[in-house]
Length: 76
Image (cartoon, rainbow, N blue to C red; front, side, top):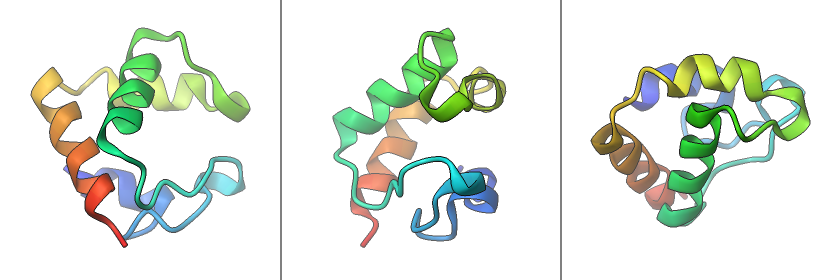
């Protein structure tokens, strides 16, 4: 699942996506779930990335969001 994310966030979440986002490497699972659900619901718009991230997150099922958050939390 993270392949799609890696194009902007880097292979290990080490990049500031499009020079705007925070580095997501090592975010704890709950933070990742909260962020992805916020983008999916359209209630989160950090650094003007809401619309772009909503387009990505809306495709994700709850299980996918949990899996992605777990993958991100494991990144070093």
